[in-house]
Image 1 (cartoon, rainbow, N blue to C red):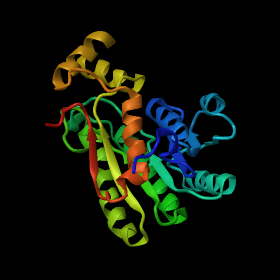
Image 2 (image 1 turned 90 degrees about the horizontal axis):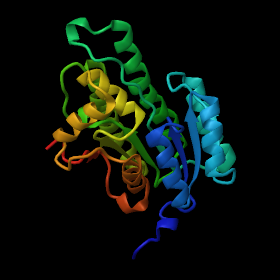
Image 3 (image 1 turned 30 degrees about the horizontal axis):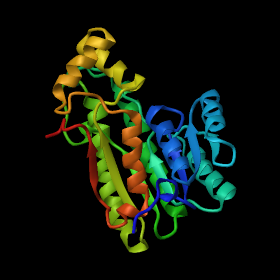
Image 4 (image 1 turned 45 degrees about the vertical axis):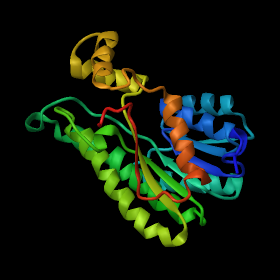
Length: 257
């Protein structure tokens, strides 16, 4: 039985961290278009206000949230339950990159910060969101193609994105008996400011030239649109993926082949 795009997430409530950023906001738009209500969490109040105004007051609420702070993550989960009566899905999407440097020179403070946001932040979303979900719930953690592979100079980012796969697999086994699914999504290079900053630092050329170098690494010969990543998140949140848990869903244009 087919499901219309407008009803794929009808009646569901989702929390999205990093919700005012590129992939986070694209996902929030896709969730609302599919019938869900969302709470978007991020660190910049002004960006959250703009995003929520775009999404509409009936469909979206917002919460300033530092994902490294347990109390703030707990409050974001509570907001979803209090505002909309339930929590069906959480997308642990907030993340930072760090710098490009060899392991022997990698700044310790930067390494610790990347792990705090990407790993501890994902853990805290999992801890509080999973406790609030009923059977049928879905947690999606945003990893990366380099959560399955890696490259030179990205020790902190690759380490953090591998680590959340371990978190996902553990949580998937723990939550299976409760009918709650846990998966990771692994985007390849995506056309947004976050990715372009990485490319410029890694390649040392202009944004356009650096992007071309990355395109040449991708079999499909282009970056993803944020909306393409968002559609994959919708799939993992929807009942269409109801028999998928513990899965690493790669959306990378073939980069990891």
